[in-house]
Amino acid sequence: MTFTEEKKKKIRLLFVCLGNICRSPAAEGIMAAVVEKYDLQGVIEVDSAGTSGWHDGELPDDRMRSHGERRGYDFCSRARKFKKADLHDFDYIVVMDRQIFDDVRAFAINQEQKDKIHMMTEYSRQYAHHDHIPDPYYGGASGFELVLDLLEDACEGLLQSIRQRYSL
Ligand code: 4NP
Image (cartoon, rainbow, N blue to C red; front, top):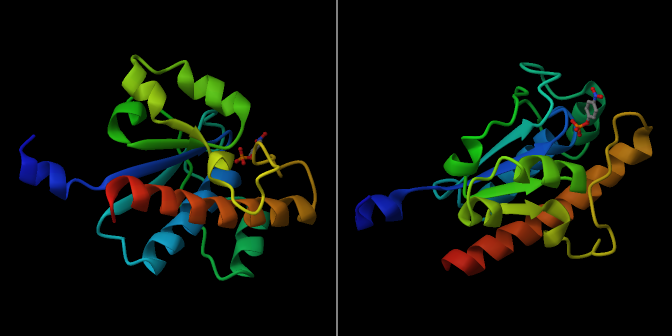
């Protein structure tokens, strides 16, 4: 890749959870809004995936969508399964909990790929005492609200970390 091509290449972020219908599509939607807020949509690209593939092709969970709507988000991505090539294609693989971290890491073929994998909570600022994004699927409304609180906080932290790393 030439220097000019390298400069033009977008920074690609992939958020990963289990089903790709609750936490990671919310992270994708929130991060897209944060990227837009800083006018970096020409530089940073976001996507999400799930390790299970159980909900392939589905829209995010209705509860996640309606909790998101109340905060002004439209979570409308379609679920897809995480694949090995994602570790090559993306610059950041941001995972929601330790199990997902281990599952994704098992696909990494070298240190460069391993280094791309980060816990979402690594970027928490106000919610620094949370070490993962808890799965809200089998719980109630407060679980979805907590996920959104944690993700809004960590997405802002992630954006600042990227700005610093790439001098944006
Ligand atoms: P997610 O939540 O990993 O945040 O999308 C889940 C969605 C679906 C299931 C579990 C967790 N499920 O068992 O189908």
